[in-house]
Length: 224
Image (cartoon, rainbow, N blue to C red; front, side, top):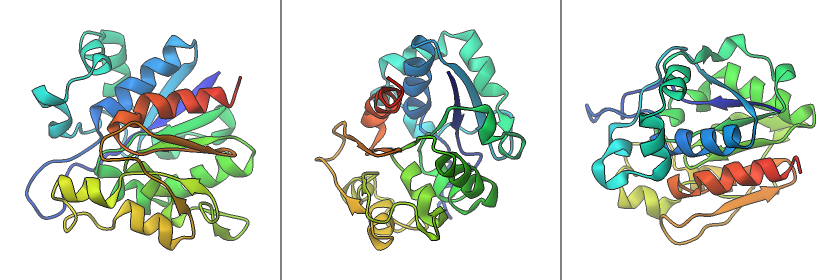
C-alpha cells in the first residue's frame, strides 16, 4: 500500500513574529501507524525539503512515544528532511493521502491550488482522504460534484474552544470549526484535547494532535 503524507511549508504564525509549521505528533504518529503496517510512505510539502516543525509541538511537555521514536530514527528523519514538492506528486501513484495539521496549513495548503486539486483528484477517483487537527480546514475550497466536499458530511477538526485555549483565535486566518460548519458539514467534537476521529464514507477527520493515531488507524481500517 502506498500512502502520501502532506505537511505544510509555512512557518510564520500570522503577524505575531512567532514561528509555526506542522505539529510533530501529527506527522510522527501516523508515519509509524502506516509504516508499522507495512505501507510505503512518501512525504510532500508545497516547497519540498525540510518542512518547518512548530516549535511548540516539540516542547518538553508535549512529548509523545512517536515523537521520542522519530528523533532516534535516522531513516524517518531523512524522509522528513527531503519531502518532495507537492506539485510533483500524482494521486494516481498512491492509494490514499493523509494531511498532518499544525497551524501552518491554514495559510499555505488551505489556499494552494495544487493541494485543492490533489484532494479533489484523490476523492473523485474513489480513494479515501484523511486530515487531522487544523488540516480539515484545508478542505475549505475543495469541491466534489460542484459542492463543498464536506457538505452534509460528519466531520471534526480543531475546535473553537481548543483555538481559544491556545490563544490564537484572532491570529489564524479562519476557525476550522466555523469554516466547516459554514460549508454545510455536520461538525462533531469531544472535550478539548481528547482523541476523536470520524469516518464518513471516504473522508476521515481527526480533532486534534491526540487524534493523530486514531485518525491514521481509521484511514487504514478503510482498506481492511
